[in-house]
Image (cartoon, rainbow over all chains, first blue to last red; front, top):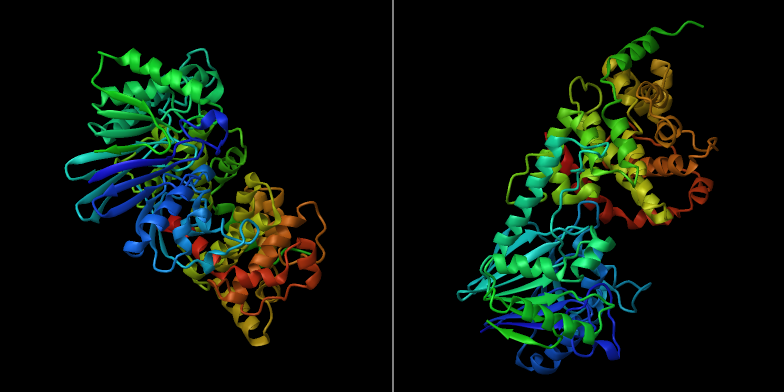
Length: 305
Length: 288
């Protein structure tokens, strides 16, 4: 069995309320099952429900043992950790991995400092679970039991990793939070800082880095990609914020032979009605032009690979 | 009164030290500006081929574990962003100035390095604890790293005298800067101040170099950084992290902690964090 379940798909901040009941209001959390192994990607606010579900349904079969992979340490991706009930249950084993910026504290300090009296009534030292932390780079990990994980740095204001998981001949990848690489150097000859060589090198670097991202998820059975903005919103002042547009994600996934794309990291201001409309619009737009299956991620949905 | 022979030797040594304008000073100026453009950053690093080589080596080091080699700075900036490359350049530029091992005689280079690194790391932690704005944190780090830079000319130009100064400090159980003054006529804060002048470093870092042993009297506008460096220096000597020639550091007066706004007891809590930070910063040292 290789399955992916969404427990949170919202970007930036949880947004509960009547406008977010279809797609969900919790921030990122994805449960991945590879046979008996449990993998969790991100500890956004969605992880609370996952934790409760595990304690209710799986604890009776033995202690919870999970590998947690953080895409990055921005708050919406780690804020649910203190409410992940298994960390309070003796016997739980949790291996937490994720990228850390050179300037920052260790992963343990970043995640664990949420469990200090100023923020939370329980301190990290008091947790019952056995938790280990490992800072992650671009690498390939053999998790055992036939599970392989490849990581790739994405383009976000803080070090951020995409994960590609291979199991039993199937594959699943994440590419959030991410925006396409762009040439940061002036390309307009009229610009006072214009340098033709640098402009050209910048264009080439951005192009090649984008190609590398696409080869990272080439041919996967399921891709979960950042689509926080529309192309118009992206161009209208959101460039450099580290998120992609629907248009970019769909084109890149289609070019890379992705079989199924889930639009993810929904903007907190996007209502159910708007998301439904956008989902339908893009489904119709690509219909007959690409074999890509496209859906907007919904909290609670499961994809079997 | 004519300058003593020793001071002349130090002056001569400092004038022969590599100059700074195109490297550290400029990198610091560019990097401390939150509005630095990718073009500015590329230009300032490219000006110094050695610095550029080191920044690229660091980007390609095990620290990032990139699967593809990055050979151009333009690409590095596009991939890792202006802020990351800025920080790499800043740390590399500063640390590089201290990493010249040639001619280290009386003082052991590794020990001196580790001490300087510890003071930089702790000064930055103090700044963070005090709530100093993020864009100034590197200034505290740089000030800590460079605070003892005056020991380099003393130690290298007058190594025999410096051995005597160390022996004097040892015998009489006094802080090294007092022994330097007696044995050489000049202490490392004064020599450091001459280097700062030669390098056109002014403001907070120059004050930290010049006044870190005179905090009680210092009331200039950069008191926060001078006090932070003094306390960090005391911490590093007390904990025996690295060795910069001082076995008997002066105690820090309770008023100094009060002025700094960080309680003395806080220093008891930071050992593990300091060790981790030094470990991280020493990655730069391994990049040659």
